[in-house]
Amino acid sequence: MDKTTLVDVDLEAGRAIVNALEARGFVIDVAAWLQDDETGVWQLAISSPDGGQIGSRPIYAAILELLPALSISELDLSDFYVAGPNQHIVRDLKRRVGTDDGLHDIRFELLSVGNRLYRSARIYRVRGDAIGHDARVRVKATGQSGTVQGVIDTPAGPRYLVLYDRDPDDLRRLDGAPRPPAG
Image (cartoon, rainbow, N blue to C red; front, top):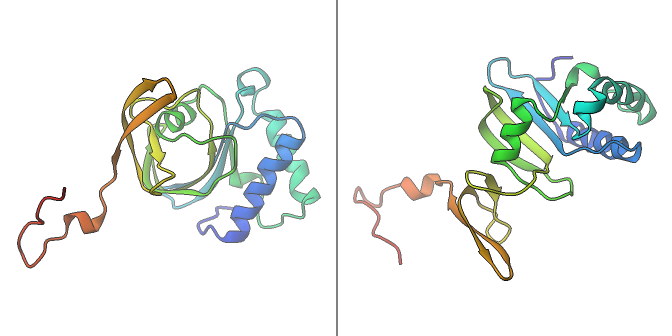
């Protein structure tokens, strides 16, 4: 269908598909809408850790059955990309983004994964083995996105040193003079 605009109904439909796939017994560890930078087309990328053994065909077949069963007419099979667990896109997403088991709505702009640039991304879930160095995260306390620069093991569990992404306000000058240092 070459979806170039992603609206709320698409986000809800994608969430419903992921939930229905899991209800059918598929383990979904990656689910993210990705907009190709060159074409502007959105696709829902889905991956299962079992995909290396079962392949993508059973997941595509389940999606094909679920679309009419869930009365989702805005999407068709071309709006989905089922990736194997060892494909570059999945491995890169797991290195850069980490979520828990829930379905989220995390936005990214200009995300480079799998040797491709994506203009925009809406992440439902990227469940990795562990959050490590260079992982892309969103800090719950502040809501800011950043990159993990270090992991410190403590008795209470791992603590993460996160370098926040710069905000345009961080770069803005005051009256033509550099901002005074904070802290």
